[in-house]
Every structure is written in C-alpha cells, then in structure tokens.
Image (cartoon, rainbow, N blue to C red):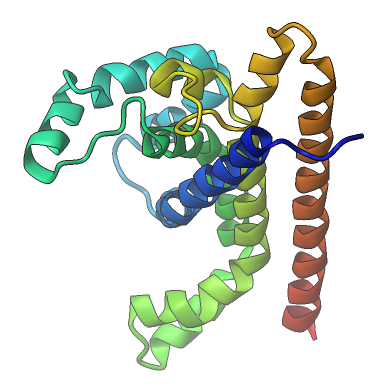
Length: 230
C-alpha cells in the first residue's frame, strides 16, 4: 500500500483537528448536562434529556440541515454571531467541528451521567458537613470518582466526531482543504474513477486511528480505576 498523498494527509489532519476541537468544546457542556441530569431535579428535565439524545435517532442529514438553518449566515443565530462577533460556521472547518460536536454530545453525556450517578452521595454530603462548598465538593470528590466515565465519554465522542459524515456534509459541504474530513475524503474517492485504492488507504488509516484511541482509553481507564480503588 503506497504512502498517503498530500490531499489525504490534509484530510487526516483536518479530521483530527475537527474531532479534537469538538471534544475540547463539547466535553465541558456534556459534563454540565450529565451532572445536571444525574443530580438535579427541575421542570423539563426529561425534555432536556430527550433533546440531548435527539441526534442519536434523527437522520444525520436532518441534524445538519437544522444546523444550517440556525447557524447559517441567514439563520437567526448565525447572522447574530457574524454581525456581533465575526464568527462564521457554515462552510468552514469550525462548522464541521460544531456538527461533529452535536452528533457526539449524546455519546458523551450518557456515560458521564452514569458515572456521576454511581458516585456515592454520602461522600459528597460528608464533605459538605465539613464545610466544603458545592464547587469544591464537585472538584475534589465527584469529578475524580467519575473520571473513568468522563474519559470513556470523551473517547466515544472523539471516535464519533472523527467519523461524522451526514451532518457535516449537509452543514458545511465537502470543500477540499476546508471541510473535507477523512469520512468525506473516503466518500469523494468512492465516487471518483480509479479512487478505490486511495479510499482503501484512508479506510485503513481511519481504522488504525480509531483503534489507537480506543486502546489508549481502555488503558487509561483501567489505570484510573486501579488508582481510585487502591
């Protein structure tokens, strides 16, 4: 199998950039939502839970189209961001990161919520009786104990963001050097005469990158679990 071409390397780097940005921005949001669903009781809680997991059941093309309506230059949110902050997401790599983050969000929220629910609330209550504030309790008790689940959510989200296709191509199109991620590059090559070999190379690269991420996450999760139980 021959080496990757410059265009294929560019697609790989862009995919890692998009997935990394999606997780860096989306993980704090997923942590907040997961904690809120696990610990808080508020009106509309089930609606929030349903909206968060909606991308799992909606066709990705529909999710991408909704993002285009909302965040496009003529959309209510997109026009506001462009006029006031100069932020443009449609047909930009940042938009690909947004699409990947939205699709990955439910895969991050679910394990984070389960990890927070598994933390014994008596430990949190004991820390509060000793005078610790809620934020301090969260940072020193809840967060460390839930860390394996948070890591699992981050890795699942990264893998999903790395392979996202439908929402991305609908929201930001398939622009070489700007929005053509690994998945879009494979799709393009399958539509190109004599592109099968290059598509196979990129498929192999995608499998290797995903396996490395999953193996690394399993290794780190085991180390964290041993340290917490030890």
